[in-house]
Image (cartoon, rainbow, N blue to C red; front, top):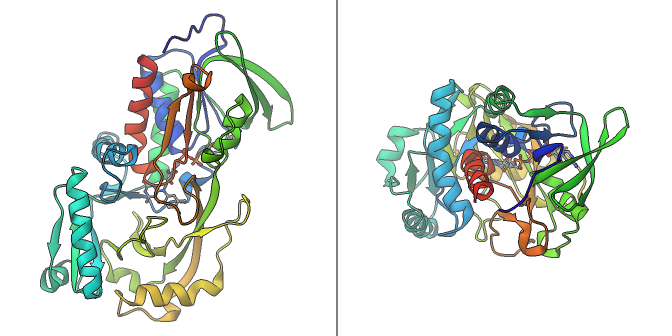
Length: 379
Ligand SMILES: Cc1cc2nc3c(=O)[nH]c(=O)nc-3n(C[C@H](O)[C@H](O)[C@H](O)COP(=O)(O)OP(=O)(O)OC[C@H]3O[C@@H](n4cnc5c(N)ncnc54)[C@H](O)[C@@H]3O)c2cc1C
């Protein structure tokens, strides 16, 4: 990338302190000077990154050769190593994808082949006895077991990314919303609206748009308007499994995924605190509003869906928990879309790097994404 950073206030500016932006800030500030991370909220991870299932995905489902597949498979190992190095709470607990009918048995055998093509070669197909040894309280005719799937405390992870970024010399600036970006000869002018409603501007040689749910709008600020990159808010709601029944599950348990991967089915997620959640479901919102309300009337649908593989479940075991919003560029009913990660010289914006549609497995892939971006910059 030939972008001279002479006379710029910042060499590199990252917009958005979610898990992806923070990982990028840590990586880039190891090798580069004068790195800024700007975030509109008063602290990190206030949007999608604190509303996920916190699963370290194995990289089973994605299309071969896609960024999602490559960055997830690479990212999960980098993430496990990072958690060990910095004592971040995690649990490589494994995941069962359960078939509750003969039709689904054929589907999980197909998933196994996709996983192998993606380089995930540690999956096992279990019959009823082996399933019962791992999870005696679930029902499944057969199951695919993924031993490299796990969970992580995403707040501790983001805190570590932030700490390391600051220690590397990165300027982390909260309460600062990017309100405009304009191209200059050697970089970009970035307009900021701060939390006291004051406006100011600074210049940066390289700009990395990691602004999650509004990353399409941030891209439009510089002049890149592309209907195929328009973000659609896609809500996922969760219900909690009340104690003491949360003790009946020790691993992640998933049904077979939806056909076009709009979501991966209402599944059982455990967290580092011993909590168990069901969800998320998938609902494209009519407009891009930050709607985190859990719809209590969905309890019946969650109950029926999970009852197929959790025979012990009663309606009253569930309670509304939380919701998150996926930044989808995949329109409803369309095939799965890949992450859009692009240095935009081709559109006339050298040194402007877009990350759009950073839905799952963005958390799992965060360190691999950061490496990928660092490689782009060093080229
Ligand atoms: C329901 C759900 C479950 C998920 N489960 C998993 C999972 O189990 N495993 C997994 O790997 N992934 C999962 N994901 C995906 C994962 O959460 C995301 O990929 C990841 O959090 C995206 O991080 P991010 O940094 O790109 O975005 P965000 O967390 O959205 O961060 C973007 C940041 O940019 C800031 N920002 C936006 N506009 C501006 C602006 N103009 N100026 C300044 N700052 C701005 C925002 O305030 C925000 O803090 C899940 C997602 C959802 C919704």
